Length: 212
Image (cartoon, rainbow, N blue to C red):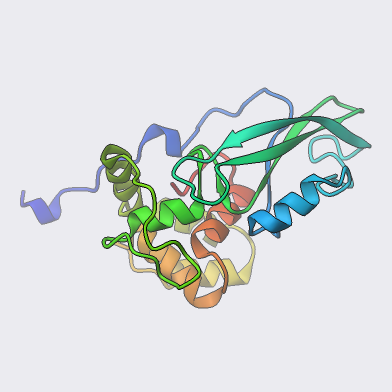
């Protein structure tokens, strides 16, 4: 069998968490919070990230449980972000609220991840730093392997979402499309931060599956 006929390697186990967690609560993505300035304004307001009801039990109210510092590695402007956790008084579920620009599990912002995936590691716009702090080569190789893995499973999640926009996006992909192709297709239809936006969308549709 030639190299071109070999099946693609299986995705890392961490990208597909098959067992559902029995833990109450979890992480929610505030998809409308796309930058540090907006996040800081909301984190200073006790109601800034307060949910109208608990996603677990549908009741409430929810109160601020605590604040935690999230270290953002290889970040030039804001190396630490304050993250709020809310607790439901009805079921005691605890919800961590992450702004869109912070990548779950990666301990970095999506801008850092996107920059590391670019071959030249140069800023794509005048507003971005010309020289980013270096990400360890081993980490970059791991991200690029995920970036170039087959996107079939992710496309299936979009196709089964019940939303025509996402189903159309999934059906337009070629069978051999990678995650990079999927992000590029998403970027053609949506302005803003396509990598962060698609990761948040997939998490909303299927929390047990990760883009990166």
